Image (tube, rainbow, N blue to C red):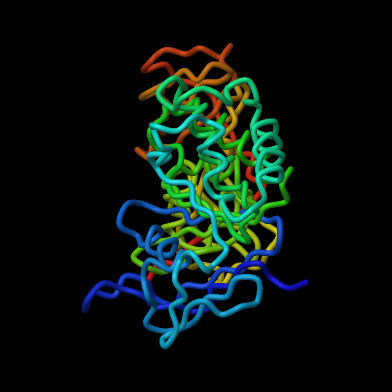
Length: 348
């Protein structure tokens, strides 16, 4: 199957400052990708290069098999068959909702325009707001109209630049799921830029974690969380602590919390000291466990508590426990390990 979007080993920058280094991503038709990373990592520059707003120094970009960017070529944005949803939605305040959605359909017959506008408003669940103006809508409603407008011309690739950043955390995740559903319904290929991992998990089939202009790891949210490729990904995705450990065998390490077994062979020889990643869900609260720790901090999350615990050795870990296990600060509780994925990092 031909990819809808291919970004092949691109370098890009501004003046003499290189921002992107050998960035590659490929998306099949109907798939949703995400560039995830901290501020200044280069993720928005990737989007600008795909859109045609920034020329690239090396590599190439193809949309639907057609080369749109290389060191010698930079097809203008309006000829790339892309749609864009911006951070501020960029709706036209003087136009009604239906006219905002119709804006990208100017080359289509009037009857077809009306049919497509009606179809898109139905898809985003807002047919009753066709005659409203943007200022009469909530932020979430404006987001849906911006998405409808971008999807109306059936772009080959849809680019979403931090589209939920102006909303609170709960609304962001809810909208991310809704937008994914809409994109799937339209079988649209899209790429999202965000610094919020929950948005990425809720929307994307494929996530690229970026840092300092390079992709650190590509994969599903599950793979990034349970099998991070390096310390940066382990620290950026989810929560956890790094504990010292001694390699016992090619699949086993010993920690202060006990022996941890894995399935994949370790690269370090027996006897070597390594660092092992322990997620909060790897530590189980168990009153009958032989190990115990002191509650240092706690955060109530509704269905569970996130406990920060200090062991007698001074090592601190995190534990996710059901919320009916409500323990006080400085209280001692029993803990044991339940690790499904053994993740270690060699010490240089």
